[in-house]
Length: 174
Image (cartoon, rainbow, N blue to C red):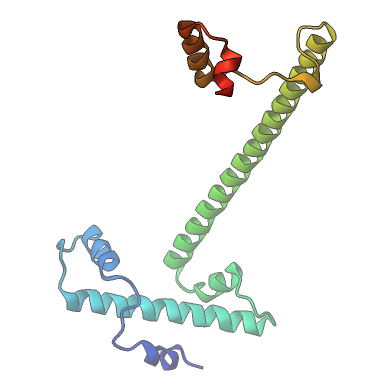
């Protein structure tokens, strides 16, 4: 199957975004706002190139008896053009470096997370031990007799009862 036969379904449609191709052209010395026809032609050329290389790589993988395309298939497809091969190898080498750096960062993150878990666990155990010791020494009320904390409403009722000279219990009942 020839790659150009498959390209017929995208005739007239842009594969890449107009802004991306315009920036690519500008980066290689064209004007900031290239003509739409220039962008369209570059889109067609890039699409045809990618489809052709992909078709050759797929053919190589199929010939090797595989359904999935590997890097070696692209290498084999571009073996006749050393400039393309150099760029492809350079790109994949950078990808490997980035993957190694991510792997190292993930390992470091896992170590840090484990250390944080251990710290939290130790802090909980220390707090629990301190609470037990305080309860044993009689510094804290027994667990069954927890007193509720006083809020602002309790302070106001007490101050009002003192000002009126009445008992705070009687005032609360009214």
